[in-house]
Image (tube, rainbow over all chains, first blue to last red):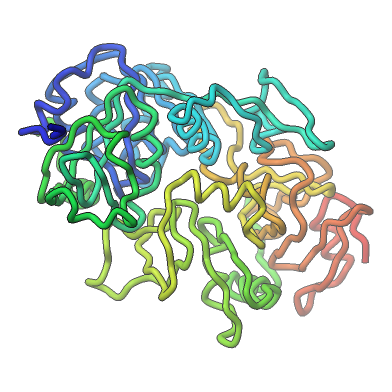
Length: 237
Length: 216
Protein backbone atom coordinates (compact mmCIF):
# COMPACT_ATOMS: atom_id res chain seq x y z
CA UNK A 1 0.00 0.00 0.00
CA UNK A 2 1.20 3.47 -0.80
CA UNK A 3 0.89 6.00 2.00
CA UNK A 4 3.07 9.07 1.84
CA UNK A 5 1.55 10.71 4.91
CA UNK A 6 4.02 11.16 7.74
CA UNK A 7 3.11 11.92 11.33
CA UNK A 8 5.02 15.13 11.97
CA UNK A 9 6.83 17.94 10.22
CA UNK A 10 9.96 17.16 12.26
CA UNK A 11 9.91 13.57 11.01
CA UNK A 12 9.32 14.77 7.44
CA UNK A 13 12.59 16.72 7.29
CA UNK A 14 14.71 14.56 9.65
CA UNK A 15 17.13 13.26 7.00
CA UNK A 16 18.08 16.60 5.40
CA UNK A 17 21.83 16.35 5.72
CA UNK A 18 24.69 18.83 5.82
CA UNK A 19 25.66 19.96 2.34
CA UNK A 20 22.27 19.11 0.80
CA UNK A 21 20.74 21.07 -2.06
CA UNK A 22 17.24 22.08 -0.95
CA UNK A 23 14.60 23.65 -3.17
CA UNK A 24 12.03 25.71 -1.28
CA UNK A 25 8.74 26.65 -2.94
CA UNK A 26 7.15 30.06 -2.64
CA UNK A 27 7.13 33.50 -4.17
CA UNK A 28 7.46 35.84 -1.26
CA UNK A 29 5.32 34.27 1.41
CA UNK A 30 2.77 32.81 -1.02
CA UNK A 31 3.50 29.09 -1.01
CA UNK A 32 6.42 29.29 1.40
CA UNK A 33 6.42 26.11 3.55
CA UNK A 34 7.21 27.94 6.76
CA UNK A 35 6.65 25.01 9.16
CA UNK A 36 8.99 22.75 7.16
CA UNK A 37 11.61 25.53 7.06
CA UNK A 38 11.35 26.02 10.82
CA UNK A 39 11.78 22.29 11.42
CA UNK A 40 14.89 22.42 9.21
CA UNK A 41 16.15 25.19 11.51
CA UNK A 42 15.43 22.94 14.52
CA UNK A 43 17.38 20.17 12.79
CA UNK A 44 20.33 22.49 12.21
CA UNK A 45 21.75 21.00 8.98
CA UNK A 46 24.56 23.19 7.70
CA UNK A 47 26.25 24.16 4.44
CA UNK A 48 23.02 23.95 2.46
CA UNK A 49 22.53 25.18 -1.08
CA UNK A 50 19.02 26.65 -1.21
CA UNK A 51 17.12 27.16 -4.46
CA UNK A 52 14.21 29.57 -3.95
CA UNK A 53 13.02 32.70 -5.74
CA UNK A 54 13.59 34.98 -2.75
CA UNK A 55 15.67 35.11 0.42
CA UNK A 56 12.81 35.68 2.84
CA UNK A 57 11.79 38.64 4.92
CA UNK A 58 12.18 39.62 8.54
CA UNK A 59 13.68 36.96 10.81
CA UNK A 60 11.40 33.99 10.07
CA UNK A 61 11.16 31.35 7.33
CA UNK A 62 13.96 31.35 4.76
CA UNK A 63 15.46 34.52 6.26
CA UNK A 64 15.73 32.73 9.62
CA UNK A 65 17.32 29.69 7.97
CA UNK A 66 19.93 32.03 6.47
CA UNK A 67 20.34 33.95 9.73
CA UNK A 68 20.98 30.63 11.51
CA UNK A 69 24.01 30.24 9.22
CA UNK A 70 22.71 27.03 7.64
CA UNK A 71 22.87 28.28 4.04
CA UNK A 72 26.20 28.45 2.20
CA UNK A 73 24.72 29.42 -1.16
CA UNK A 74 21.45 30.84 -2.51
CA UNK A 75 20.28 30.27 -6.06
CA UNK A 76 17.52 32.79 -6.69
CA UNK A 77 16.19 35.59 -8.90
CA UNK A 78 15.33 38.28 -6.37
CA UNK A 79 17.33 38.21 -3.13
CA UNK A 80 15.89 41.35 -1.60
CA UNK A 81 12.50 42.73 -0.63
CA UNK A 82 11.05 45.48 1.54
CA UNK A 83 11.59 43.54 4.75
CA UNK A 84 14.69 41.65 3.70
CA UNK A 85 17.59 42.33 6.06
CA UNK A 86 19.32 39.05 6.80
CA UNK A 87 20.56 38.10 3.34
CA UNK A 88 21.80 41.59 2.34
CA UNK A 89 23.94 41.85 5.49
CA UNK A 90 25.56 38.44 5.05
CA UNK A 91 26.03 38.99 1.32
CA UNK A 92 27.77 42.33 1.84
CA UNK A 93 29.98 40.68 4.46
CA UNK A 94 30.92 38.01 1.92
CA UNK A 95 29.49 35.28 4.14
CA UNK A 96 26.94 33.80 1.74
CA UNK A 97 27.29 32.92 -1.92
CA UNK A 98 24.70 34.08 -4.47
CA UNK A 99 23.93 32.64 -7.88
CA UNK A 100 21.57 35.16 -9.45
CA UNK A 101 19.33 33.66 -12.14
CA UNK A 102 16.61 35.34 -14.22
CA UNK A 103 13.26 34.17 -12.87
CA UNK A 104 12.17 32.36 -16.03
CA UNK A 105 15.56 30.72 -16.36
CA UNK A 106 15.33 29.59 -12.74
CA UNK A 107 11.91 28.04 -13.40
CA UNK A 108 13.10 26.34 -16.57
CA UNK A 109 16.30 25.04 -14.94
CA UNK A 110 14.19 23.40 -12.23
CA UNK A 111 11.72 22.06 -14.80
CA UNK A 112 14.60 20.68 -16.87
CA UNK A 113 16.21 19.12 -13.81
CA UNK A 114 13.00 17.28 -13.05
CA UNK A 115 12.37 16.31 -16.66
CA UNK A 116 15.70 14.64 -17.37
CA UNK A 117 16.92 17.50 -19.57
CA UNK A 118 20.52 18.36 -18.62
CA UNK A 119 20.68 21.75 -20.34
CA UNK A 120 18.86 24.07 -22.72
CA UNK A 121 19.31 27.34 -24.60
CA UNK A 122 17.31 30.45 -23.68
CA UNK A 123 17.28 34.03 -25.00
CA UNK A 124 16.96 35.48 -21.48
CA UNK A 125 20.10 37.28 -20.22
CA UNK A 126 21.97 37.23 -23.57
CA UNK A 127 24.23 40.33 -23.77
CA UNK A 128 23.97 40.88 -20.01
CA UNK A 129 26.40 40.19 -17.15
CA UNK A 130 24.37 37.09 -16.20
CA UNK A 131 25.41 35.39 -19.46
CA UNK A 132 29.12 36.15 -19.07
CA UNK A 133 31.31 33.06 -19.37
CA UNK A 134 28.42 30.94 -20.63
CA UNK A 135 28.14 29.26 -24.02
CA UNK A 136 26.23 31.36 -26.60
CA UNK A 137 24.81 29.74 -29.69
CA UNK A 138 22.80 31.16 -32.58
CA UNK A 139 19.58 29.60 -33.84
CA UNK A 140 17.89 31.24 -36.83
CA UNK A 141 20.07 34.30 -36.40
CA UNK A 142 19.23 34.91 -32.75
CA UNK A 143 21.63 34.38 -29.84
CA UNK A 144 20.79 32.06 -26.95
CA UNK A 145 22.67 31.16 -23.77
CA UNK A 146 23.23 27.63 -22.50
CA UNK A 147 21.75 27.02 -19.06
CA UNK A 148 21.87 23.82 -17.01
CA UNK A 149 19.07 21.96 -15.29
CA UNK A 150 19.08 21.92 -11.48
CA UNK A 151 18.35 18.88 -9.34
CA UNK A 152 18.01 18.85 -5.58
CA UNK A 153 18.35 16.38 -2.76
CA UNK A 154 15.16 17.69 -1.17
CA UNK A 155 12.28 19.96 -2.11
CA UNK A 156 10.12 21.62 0.55
CA UNK A 157 6.70 22.62 -0.71
CA UNK A 158 3.40 23.90 0.65
CA UNK A 159 0.15 22.85 -0.98
CA UNK A 160 -3.56 23.27 -0.35
CA UNK A 161 -4.89 19.72 -0.57
CA UNK A 162 -3.13 16.36 -0.72
CA UNK A 163 -4.07 12.68 -0.60
CA UNK A 164 -2.05 9.67 0.52
CA UNK A 165 -0.65 9.19 -2.99
CA UNK A 166 0.86 12.69 -2.88
CA UNK A 167 -1.49 14.15 -5.47
CA UNK A 168 -1.54 17.89 -4.82
CA UNK A 169 -3.56 20.99 -5.53
CA UNK A 170 -2.49 24.52 -4.67
CA UNK A 171 -4.19 27.79 -3.78
CA UNK A 172 -4.01 30.86 -6.04
CA UNK A 173 -0.49 32.26 -6.58
CA UNK A 174 0.93 29.95 -3.91
CA UNK A 175 1.53 27.47 -6.72
CA UNK A 176 4.47 29.32 -8.36
CA UNK A 177 7.65 27.17 -8.38
CA UNK A 178 6.30 24.30 -6.28
CA UNK A 179 5.02 21.93 -8.99
CA UNK A 180 8.42 22.23 -10.73
CA UNK A 181 10.37 21.68 -7.53
CA UNK A 182 8.34 18.55 -6.74
CA UNK A 183 9.74 16.97 -9.93
CA UNK A 184 13.37 17.96 -9.42
CA UNK A 185 14.27 16.53 -6.01
CA UNK A 186 15.29 13.05 -4.90
CA UNK A 187 12.96 13.54 -1.92
CA UNK A 188 9.99 15.89 -2.11
CA UNK A 189 8.45 16.88 1.20
CA UNK A 190 5.05 18.60 1.25
CA UNK A 191 3.07 20.37 3.93
CA UNK A 192 -0.64 20.27 3.15
CA UNK A 193 -3.40 22.40 4.65
CA UNK A 194 -5.96 19.69 3.92
CA UNK A 195 -5.59 15.92 3.62
CA UNK A 196 -8.38 14.08 1.83
CA UNK A 197 -9.16 10.46 1.00
CA UNK A 198 -7.84 9.07 -2.26
CA UNK A 199 -10.35 9.87 -4.99
CA UNK A 200 -11.61 13.05 -3.40
CA UNK A 201 -9.36 15.24 -5.56
CA UNK A 202 -10.84 15.32 -9.06
CA UNK A 203 -8.20 13.61 -11.24
CA UNK A 204 -8.75 16.41 -13.78
CA UNK A 205 -7.79 18.97 -11.13
CA UNK A 206 -4.59 17.37 -9.80
CA UNK A 207 -1.74 19.83 -10.33
CA UNK A 208 1.16 17.76 -9.01
CA UNK A 209 0.79 14.04 -9.72
CA UNK A 210 1.64 11.95 -6.67
CA UNK A 211 4.59 10.20 -8.33
CA UNK A 212 6.64 13.37 -7.77
CA UNK A 213 5.96 13.45 -4.03
CA UNK A 214 7.58 11.39 -1.28
CA UNK A 215 6.24 12.71 2.02
CA UNK A 216 3.17 14.68 3.02
CA UNK A 217 2.57 16.19 6.44
CA UNK A 218 -0.68 17.77 7.56
CA UNK A 219 -0.27 21.39 8.70
CA UNK A 220 -3.86 22.54 9.01
CA UNK A 221 -3.20 26.06 10.26
CA UNK A 222 0.11 27.28 8.84
CA UNK A 223 1.70 30.45 10.13
CA UNK A 224 1.84 33.45 7.84
CA UNK A 225 5.22 35.01 7.22
CA UNK A 226 3.87 38.55 6.82
CA UNK A 227 2.02 38.38 10.13
CA UNK A 228 5.07 37.01 11.95
CA UNK A 229 7.22 39.74 10.38
CA UNK A 230 4.68 42.45 11.28
CA UNK A 231 4.75 41.19 14.87
CA UNK A 232 8.54 41.35 14.93
CA UNK A 233 8.83 37.60 15.59
CA UNK A 234 12.02 35.62 15.11
CA UNK A 235 12.76 31.96 14.69
CA UNK A 236 14.03 30.23 16.77
CA UNK A 237 11.78 32.13 19.16
CA UNK B 1 23.80 67.03 -6.30
CA UNK B 2 20.59 69.03 -6.15
CA UNK B 3 17.27 67.66 -7.26
CA UNK B 4 15.85 69.23 -10.40
CA UNK B 5 12.38 70.55 -11.14
CA UNK B 6 10.15 67.91 -12.70
CA UNK B 7 8.23 69.29 -15.70
CA UNK B 8 5.61 67.91 -18.07
CA UNK B 9 3.17 65.11 -17.33
CA UNK B 10 2.47 63.75 -13.84
CA UNK B 11 3.02 60.05 -13.16
CA UNK B 12 -0.69 59.41 -13.61
CA UNK B 13 -0.75 61.33 -16.90
CA UNK B 14 2.21 59.25 -18.11
CA UNK B 15 0.35 56.09 -17.15
CA UNK B 16 -2.72 57.41 -18.98
CA UNK B 17 -0.66 57.96 -22.16
CA UNK B 18 0.55 54.36 -22.08
CA UNK B 19 -2.91 53.03 -21.22
CA UNK B 20 -4.42 54.74 -24.28
CA UNK B 21 -1.97 52.88 -26.54
CA UNK B 22 -2.97 49.39 -25.37
CA UNK B 23 -5.12 47.70 -28.04
CA UNK B 24 -8.39 46.03 -27.05
CA UNK B 25 -7.87 42.35 -26.27
CA UNK B 26 -4.19 42.63 -25.29
CA UNK B 27 -2.40 40.38 -22.83
CA UNK B 28 -0.21 42.71 -20.79
CA UNK B 29 2.43 42.38 -18.08
CA UNK B 30 2.98 45.49 -15.96
CA UNK B 31 6.23 45.80 -14.01
CA UNK B 32 6.54 46.83 -10.39
CA UNK B 33 6.19 50.54 -9.57
CA UNK B 34 5.10 53.15 -12.10
CA UNK B 35 3.97 50.57 -14.70
CA UNK B 36 1.35 49.32 -12.21
CA UNK B 37 -0.42 52.72 -12.45
CA UNK B 38 -1.31 52.01 -16.09
CA UNK B 39 -4.06 49.56 -15.11
CA UNK B 40 -5.95 52.42 -13.42
CA UNK B 41 -6.20 54.31 -16.71
CA UNK B 42 -7.19 51.73 -19.31
CA UNK B 43 -10.48 52.88 -20.94
CA UNK B 44 -13.50 50.92 -19.70
CA UNK B 45 -14.66 50.02 -23.21
CA UNK B 46 -11.64 47.83 -23.95
CA UNK B 47 -10.67 44.51 -22.42
CA UNK B 48 -7.08 43.95 -21.27
CA UNK B 49 -5.95 40.76 -19.53
CA UNK B 50 -3.16 41.32 -17.03
CA UNK B 51 -0.48 38.71 -16.52
CA UNK B 52 1.60 38.56 -13.38
CA UNK B 53 4.63 36.32 -13.64
CA UNK B 54 4.05 34.64 -10.30
CA UNK B 55 1.25 32.67 -11.90
CA UNK B 56 -1.95 34.58 -12.65
CA UNK B 57 -3.55 35.59 -15.93
CA UNK B 58 -6.54 37.81 -15.23
CA UNK B 59 -5.17 39.92 -12.41
CA UNK B 60 -7.76 42.29 -11.01
CA UNK B 61 -7.52 45.37 -8.80
CA UNK B 62 -6.40 45.63 -5.20
CA UNK B 63 -8.93 43.89 -2.90
CA UNK B 64 -11.09 45.81 -0.46
CA UNK B 65 -9.73 46.09 3.06
CA UNK B 66 -10.33 42.86 4.91
CA UNK B 67 -10.76 40.85 1.70
CA UNK B 68 -7.03 40.20 1.13
CA UNK B 69 -5.88 36.65 0.43
CA UNK B 70 -2.29 36.20 1.63
CA UNK B 71 -1.67 33.76 -1.21
CA UNK B 72 -3.12 35.96 -3.97
CA UNK B 73 -0.41 38.47 -4.80
CA UNK B 74 1.28 40.09 -7.78
CA UNK B 75 4.94 40.11 -8.78
CA UNK B 76 5.48 43.09 -6.49
CA UNK B 77 4.12 40.88 -3.67
CA UNK B 78 1.09 43.14 -3.22
CA UNK B 79 -2.40 41.74 -2.64
CA UNK B 80 -4.50 41.56 -5.80
CA UNK B 81 -7.70 39.89 -6.96
CA UNK B 82 -8.46 37.44 -9.76
CA UNK B 83 -10.97 38.53 -12.40
CA UNK B 84 -13.82 36.35 -13.66
CA UNK B 85 -12.18 34.09 -16.23
CA UNK B 86 -8.77 34.25 -14.55
CA UNK B 87 -6.45 31.25 -14.29
CA UNK B 88 -3.54 30.20 -12.10
CA UNK B 89 -0.47 28.32 -13.32
CA UNK B 90 3.05 27.42 -12.26
CA UNK B 91 6.21 29.34 -13.10
CA UNK B 92 7.27 27.27 -16.10
CA UNK B 93 3.91 27.93 -17.77
CA UNK B 94 4.08 31.59 -16.75
CA UNK B 95 7.46 32.04 -18.41
CA UNK B 96 6.34 30.01 -21.41
CA UNK B 97 3.81 32.82 -21.88
CA UNK B 98 6.59 35.39 -21.50
CA UNK B 99 9.54 33.84 -23.29
CA UNK B 100 7.43 32.08 -25.90
CA UNK B 101 6.10 35.36 -27.28
CA UNK B 102 2.51 34.89 -26.14
CA UNK B 103 2.18 38.19 -24.27
CA UNK B 104 1.51 41.32 -26.31
CA UNK B 105 2.96 44.08 -24.14
CA UNK B 106 5.41 44.34 -21.27
CA UNK B 107 5.78 47.70 -19.54
CA UNK B 108 8.86 48.15 -17.39
CA UNK B 109 10.66 50.82 -15.42
CA UNK B 110 14.19 51.82 -16.38
CA UNK B 111 17.45 53.14 -15.04
CA UNK B 112 18.69 53.83 -18.59
CA UNK B 113 17.55 53.29 -22.18
CA UNK B 114 19.95 53.81 -25.07
CA UNK B 115 19.11 55.03 -28.55
CA UNK B 116 19.36 51.48 -29.91
CA UNK B 117 16.80 50.24 -27.38
CA UNK B 118 19.19 48.66 -24.88
CA UNK B 119 17.62 48.59 -21.41
CA UNK B 120 19.30 48.75 -18.00
CA UNK B 121 16.79 48.37 -15.16
CA UNK B 122 17.99 45.80 -12.62
CA UNK B 123 21.27 46.90 -11.12
CA UNK B 124 23.34 50.02 -10.66
CA UNK B 125 26.38 47.74 -10.41
CA UNK B 126 27.51 49.63 -7.31
CA UNK B 127 29.59 47.73 -4.76
CA UNK B 128 27.38 46.63 -1.89
CA UNK B 129 24.21 46.77 -3.98
CA UNK B 130 22.23 43.54 -3.79
CA UNK B 131 21.69 42.45 -7.40
CA UNK B 132 18.12 41.30 -8.06
CA UNK B 133 16.80 40.62 -11.53
CA UNK B 134 13.41 38.91 -11.15
CA UNK B 135 11.66 38.35 -14.47
CA UNK B 136 12.91 41.43 -16.34
CA UNK B 137 15.41 39.63 -18.58
CA UNK B 138 12.79 37.07 -19.60
CA UNK B 139 10.18 39.75 -20.30
CA UNK B 140 12.44 41.77 -22.61
CA UNK B 141 13.62 38.59 -24.35
CA UNK B 142 10.18 37.30 -25.16
CA UNK B 143 7.30 39.77 -25.07
CA UNK B 144 6.24 41.16 -28.46
CA UNK B 145 6.22 44.85 -27.49
CA UNK B 146 8.44 46.20 -24.72
CA UNK B 147 7.54 49.64 -23.41
CA UNK B 148 9.37 51.63 -20.78
CA UNK B 149 7.73 54.17 -18.48
CA UNK B 150 10.13 56.37 -16.55
CA UNK B 151 10.94 59.91 -15.55
CA UNK B 152 12.92 61.52 -18.37
CA UNK B 153 15.97 62.23 -16.20
CA UNK B 154 17.07 61.13 -12.72
CA UNK B 155 16.09 63.09 -9.61
CA UNK B 156 19.40 64.94 -9.88
CA UNK B 157 19.01 65.65 -13.58
CA UNK B 158 21.21 62.94 -15.07
CA UNK B 159 20.27 61.50 -18.47
CA UNK B 160 18.22 58.32 -18.49
CA UNK B 161 17.97 58.31 -22.28
CA UNK B 162 21.63 57.79 -23.12
CA UNK B 163 23.98 57.05 -26.01
CA UNK B 164 25.07 53.83 -24.32
CA UNK B 165 23.95 52.31 -21.02
CA UNK B 166 26.59 52.49 -18.28
CA UNK B 167 24.61 50.24 -15.94
CA UNK B 168 24.47 46.44 -16.48
CA UNK B 169 22.07 45.57 -19.29
CA UNK B 170 18.74 43.82 -18.94
CA UNK B 171 18.63 43.25 -22.69
CA UNK B 172 20.14 44.61 -25.88
CA UNK B 173 17.96 46.32 -28.51
CA UNK B 174 14.74 45.33 -26.75
CA UNK B 175 12.81 48.56 -26.03
CA UNK B 176 10.19 49.65 -28.57
CA UNK B 177 8.78 52.79 -26.93
CA UNK B 178 9.45 55.08 -23.97
CA UNK B 179 6.87 57.10 -22.00
CA UNK B 180 8.43 59.87 -19.91
CA UNK B 181 7.11 62.97 -18.15
CA UNK B 182 8.33 65.01 -21.13
CA UNK B 183 7.47 62.93 -24.19
CA UNK B 184 6.45 59.70 -25.85
CA UNK B 185 9.41 58.41 -27.83
CA UNK B 186 9.66 55.54 -30.32
CA UNK B 187 12.86 53.52 -30.63
CA UNK B 188 13.44 53.21 -34.38
CA UNK B 189 16.22 51.87 -36.59
CA UNK B 190 17.32 55.48 -37.15
CA UNK B 191 17.27 56.46 -33.47
CA UNK B 192 14.85 57.93 -30.91
CA UNK B 193 11.86 59.51 -32.64
CA UNK B 194 9.59 61.89 -30.73
CA UNK B 195 5.92 61.02 -31.15
CA UNK B 196 4.39 63.48 -28.68
CA UNK B 197 5.61 66.07 -26.22
CA UNK B 198 3.97 67.11 -22.95
CA UNK B 199 2.22 70.50 -22.95
CA UNK B 200 4.70 73.35 -22.54
CA UNK B 201 7.73 71.27 -23.46
CA UNK B 202 9.73 72.48 -26.46
CA UNK B 203 11.78 70.22 -28.68
CA UNK B 204 14.89 72.17 -27.68
CA UNK B 205 14.23 71.55 -23.98
CA UNK B 206 13.51 67.88 -24.63
CA UNK B 207 16.78 67.54 -26.54
CA UNK B 208 18.70 69.20 -23.66
CA UNK B 209 17.30 66.53 -21.35
CA UNK B 210 18.27 63.68 -23.69
CA UNK B 211 21.81 62.52 -24.48
CA UNK B 212 21.31 61.07 -27.99
CA UNK B 213 20.16 63.31 -30.84
CA UNK B 214 16.39 63.06 -31.14
CA UNK B 215 14.42 62.78 -34.37
CA UNK B 216 11.59 65.31 -34.52
